Image 1 (cartoon, rainbow, N blue to C red):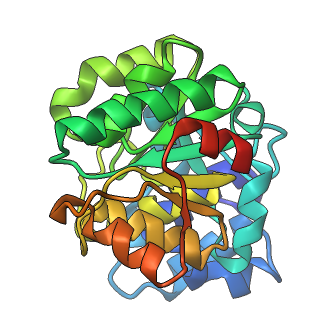
Image 2 (cartoon, rainbow, N blue to C red):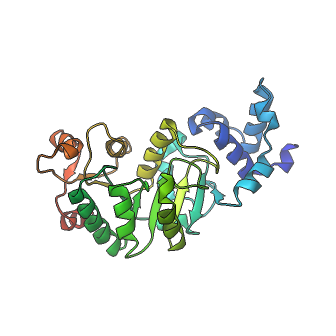
Image 3 (cartoon, rainbow, N blue to C red):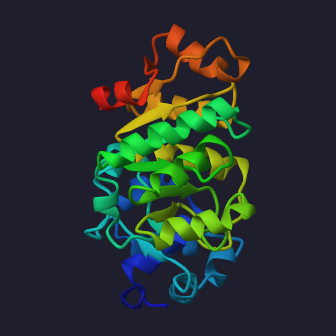
Length: 278
């Protein structure tokens, strides 16, 4: 395909399907996305990239969701903080103006196998945060994150960041919640084109995206070495304020306690404290 026939959007989608942002950042700083894609095709000795059809692949994928790129006016401004690690594009379902939805986003996250107390707290925090006009964001996971989405929907839109293509929910049994989010003013976002399955790598990258889109992260309850704790650690990496609910000595909140003891998180025992800190 001649360079002039390949759009920048299709080229970015093709690059995103095969490379991480840091693998092509240097080339994109000097050349257009179309030029970089065609350079990569020429250098690929396997022939795999030559068989890929960027325009038709993008058209088929956009039957279920749209592909947003950094030059679009709806692109979330917060992602510019990522520099060379900024996504090449985002797959989006739902809200048409992602920049508005993410202007004041607060992540509410915690254990997947959460205690009943943590579920109740997640609902309280999410309701309070969403009632004051912030967008609650989470991962659609079971436990704290799902409770946060459900509570936020009572007051307004919520944002879900998924570690797989948006043609399916993750976990797959959260399909009804995903539909509620995208049909009631919220949005689902992913780094990955439809059909991409979840993996350890996609889960890690999505945790960083979730945090990068946010103003603040609230950790309700997290076991040490849990996925929720990885989201909290991503907040530290990206210099996002991290608020943690102190525990009553429960092992389920071992991650919260460690972060508080090390001075890496600010104690936030109630939603009122969260709103004051926000």
